[in-house]
Image (cartoon, rainbow, N blue to C red; front, top):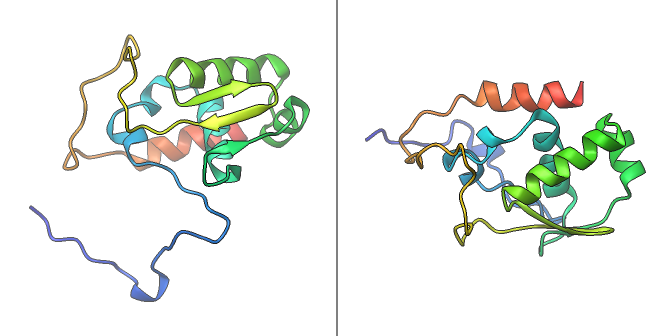
Length: 134
């Protein structure tokens, strides 16, 4: 097993005062493989603006403007996140759901769970997000 160490001790990441983070299991457990670029962008935005309980509320108009989506695209992205049990939504409130409990039903085309040692092509992940934001 490869020994990992920080490349820059001066720039170690810490949880910021305005709490925000992305759970690595989003990639390792292949949730992200089930999502469109628009759903990835919406999830990233919601995770970024959510409070410590995962709660946030932005109007559809604000989300469409910020993410360059039509209302139909936003609705599709939101439904995909709900279907993958990544978010709960009750107008106007979003809640980012924890990945601790396994969803009652895995997405139909889910791949087997990856291990920590499986390679992840982070370029593909960011390309999906960039494509959705472009």
